Length: 566
View: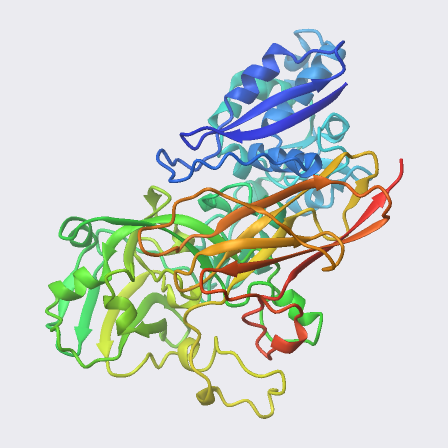
């Protein structure tokens, strides 16, 4: 039997898992239907703007996505159910196991078991389980589970359906040991400024631990129009501050203003709540490709340092008006400071042009919600700036101070970072004062599936290419061109039917193209390039836009795949 899963989203933003079985002689267990239909992706958005009925046909990655979303959850339960049916145990087995003395393992020992060869081990609370035999039943085939070598809790916490007695009883059959007591609740160094960091989803690809920076697997990035908070890319420059929302104060001062201090409740109640859907992208997104040309300095971001979310909060222009900003103000900039600080006490800071801050269609927010939930700690709780269409570095998190000024921020990240230079500039001759700070970002598009170096079976009838496209400054993506032969011929992809915000297109568009699989080729180079409504286009290669900081890479996205015969 081959079990095929398809992820679809209802109009209420609820992901459902549907099953289709190949071969007429086989059926799907009722228990599986029940379990799958109850799975929910924890992105509690009851009114997503889009009615995008994307169908994702890359079966292997859809299976992996399912494993990610459920954290071995529904699939694990199904695999365990099948094993239980195939190998029935006496009812006394669990009682006997409860009396068994198990070996004790460390988390480091468990982490070594991530492959079928070494055994697939996971932990839940204080227990260790070997689920290697389940991997054979996994619809994703030999894809290693994202929870392998680690804890199930980060995955299962997303779905209460798995916290049921029968699931735990079945899982108990795979128990092989226990964690040593000190590993059940790991201690931390009280002198470490990063000791109180929030928990993160283990599916994130970590680029640095201190400060924490991570991105989701690119293969799942375009599965959701609104990126779930749990896998939204994280860009931190300093330790994440702990903020008591009841003690929080926002300080506003500067040119032509009376000094004002606002509580979080003030911001939530004194000003109209404004909602936008906007994409945030790190300036270093796709830096790894620049490293392929020549080494640069910076985090080795892949293709997923970008995300799309629904943000809600007060308009910055309303708050500045409340603070007495005169109409004839001659200030040029609005500076922001966060509560995240370095060892000297200096905060992260940035600034934007005042014309962007005050523009009626600028939509700059002091946001306190992300995807209908309070901001997560990693994304700025309790308050952050959202500057749609502008590089992520200006979207200051844990906002503490706003200053209206004739000068831009003197912060290191405004003055001596996040700037673009000629490929001829190196660290011996760079002059950061010679370049303006990055604000609006250029047109961008990326292939998220298939993966680079993926092998496709020649008996496939068709191939689906998919990805995301976005342009800064509110410019709407109007077309994505896709080539399956290295750029010799092109086809136009289908764009997600999502209405942009009135006047501006702050959010990305998801796209896909399904075409017959060429039968006479062994290798394919797939390329995509986007065009926005100002007819800005992407450069075809990385080398001409290479720069020593590895920012602003928006070259054509390229993926090479191999077609293999069975």
